[in-house]
Image 1 (cartoon, rainbow, N blue to C red):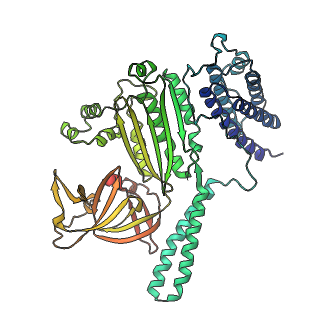
Image 2 (spheres, rainbow, N blue to C red; image 1 turned 180 degrees about the vertical axis):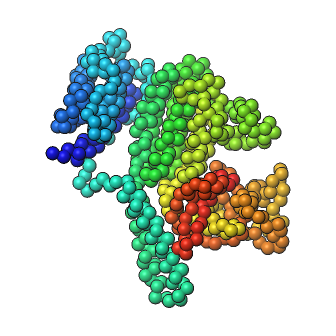
Image 3 (tube, helix red, strand yellow; image 1 turned 60 degrees about the vertical axis):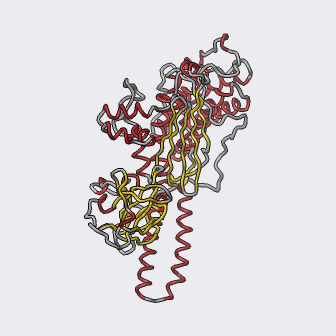
Length: 537
């Protein structure tokens, strides 16, 4: 009998139970005891045992049965939910997750944690510590602490699972249809036949509807990647002897699967830095007049066609002068350049490859890797990263990302031999300037707009092309963009209007072009490069 179908179902269902199992344990650590949550944890362990019994996975049955025993004692009031028990339950959850992965790969499940069954069966809380504290002595980590729980429900028959490869193909086909729609428009205009107008308008409306539906199918809740963050913060803080409360807001916000995949690891880097660099020890916090336990909060919010992810802590903060001193010491910048840096530019030094202020190398930090990967990932997605910090108050990392990166609205311009597309979400406005409007300010070309001097750069020069020596009295087309909280103006040869484009990744050697992060092909076969505004700035 072919058991592969049932194995896939077991893996999917078991992982759902384990996710809820781990989340509720972390929640209980913060609340000190909650009968509804304890009952729900027990039900998840019982469900896993029942499914494993159906499939004949004896090691999973044995471990889940012991979990039931320990949780039964907590339910009955025989034991209190102490931190040591939480550690053991989380370790058991990891072991179950590992065995589920073994099942998924086609292997028989084996408990790899040494002596776990024995430690679980012999566990007994220290009687002296079995007192319900108003605030847990051990580090605890909250994820939206509340006495109300959203318990897991089975999938409705109205929904089905679709392979991600199928969704990717649908996006590609939709993008090709949008490209061909522009080809049809061009053919209709050249033929001069008005009968094409109505069908093309109808086609445009249907393609937009198709695009929206395909994007909706690719959208996933942020909690898909965030479910591991509370445990990550908990374990790292516990290892370093720090008390940290972790808060997560907006986990139900949805965004494109491809963005979720790319942003997961950068968020891990920032959270690890927040615990390792940002958070003080309890003694240090008390000496500074703070609460013994610190807070790390991750907030996700949607702003029109963008997503904002903010990670902030109330830790020690960053010293901009120390960052600049380290940068000069490492040869990243000169002393003169350090003096000219703005506060935001000083904080962004942490994103320089190989930059680190840590005096020692550990398994968490000190090797100068991490934040440069965060910066690269955010900007490869067409997003922005900004950093704010205050000594003794804390730090704030904000990422602004597009909801999707496959099909975008763009402003097309001509720059020398190149057709360039600026993502509309980075464009503030278009301008026509006179040569006399451009002035020298602090050694760079600027223009005064609304009382502020905004830097001006030639897009031709940035792309390695010949720059027109003198515009004379002719008006100069320009694009005003915003990136990282700053504005910049790019001089171009011609403005060509807006167009919806299907974004295609670049391969080597084109992917090495500075200031270009992707491309598209128009209906008439022209290659249009998509500008990386942050890199150009």
